[in-house]
Amino acid sequence: MNILAVPFFATDQVWSVMLQLCIIAVGLLAGNIIRTKVSFMQKSLIPSALIGGALILIFRWIYSDVLGWEDLINKSTMEIITYHALGLGFVALALKNNKVESKSSTMKVIETGTLTASTYIIQGIVGLLVTIPMFYFGKQIFYAAGLLLPMGYGQGPGQALNFGTIYMDRAAEQGIAFPGKDFGLSIAAMGFIIGCVVGVIYLNILKKKGKIKISEIKEKQMNKLSDYEGENEIPDTESVDKLSIQFCLILFTYLLVYLFNHFLQTLDLGSFGEKTLMPLMWGFNFLLGTLFGIMIKGIIKVLRKRQIMKREYINNYLLNRISGFFFDIMIVAGTAAINFSEFKGFAIPYILVCTLGAIATFWFVLKVCKHIYPNYVYEGFFSMFGMLTGTASNGMILLREIDPKFETPAANNLVLQSLPAVALGFPVLLLVSYAPQGFTQALITLGILIVVFIIFNMFMFRKKIFRKRSNDLP
Image (tube, rainbow, N blue to C red; front, side):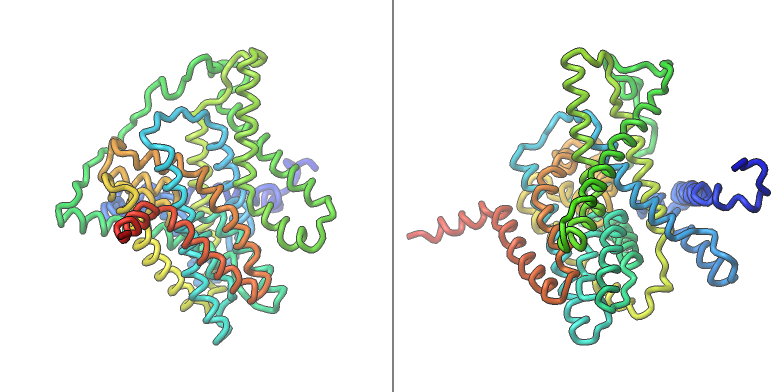
């Protein structure tokens, strides 16, 4: 088809996806302007991406619901962008050559990973304790909906959307109307607000009490040429741009994720494979992307060591920027994809899940941080609380307020904890996929989560527990 021969207004098919990307870009730019120019927004530490997504959401409501015009924002396209941006962002991070001078001991990193997994669990327990009784007594909400709390708060918009879709489909199979995608994305958006606003309020409370000192940080360009150009890297002036190489590596790795899942889908895995395994694997695009990214990075290292590959093709600085780009896009698109018109009848459970989840997360993270980070309690708390309600970037933003030069091990703990957190949290994610299969399964999941939560806490508080026992001995 000759596109140029088609009348302009007949090219919706050609421009549909590009239009949504342009809307996301405009929203992100507008959000950044507001956060930069409005002092209240700047002090709140709310990410520009979330403000941008909220602006698109407001525009969408006025444009379609108030004025009654045809909606410019395509909800399904925004959801697709959110899904893929999550996976691509994790692939970019996985491909990086991590050269971190660790200030953290191995055990402290493991404890931090355990704290992360334990917080996911307590969020899941709180969520289920809200939605299971509400379903049992009044059928106002899907019984397993509470498990979208750790997906939204702990994992962010991408996982909230993935599992929200799974839960919506499982609820529909059981004759229950549940807007899982919107419910999950709304929890994720609220998580960003809770992390930033509550974090800032608590910062100021501690400042007034004299327990911390908030550092004034002027945002300026801190990158040097050495950050961009590593040793023996390919030059910018080669036939292929260095940035293009990074994108190609990311997309090639992401292609492996698709091929792997497509291969699994061709196998005869029965009912378990169709209803549990495959939805979970497609939902784990970010985790598979991480694993394949590590594999590709390992292959490149071997080729470099054997001198088959002469130059260094991986650039950490560019991969950092690309991952940041994808995560910003994910937040804007995920927020813009929320449809509150589907929320009729679900406002009370949503408010309860978000409120109780925020209280439980704040209390638990603070309690554990006081124990495992005795020398930098608040640095550890703000980094972890920001991450466990938003993303790692939110944790870093809050941490910079009291530790601008990252002099404590808190920043390193946050970076290095991901591997033990994934290892410990993976069984929990399997339970999240198991729970929506039936009311009994949800009850079993709640029981297992409580047991695992106790075990994880026994590990984190082991010194305190054993000290008490030794003191009790005759």
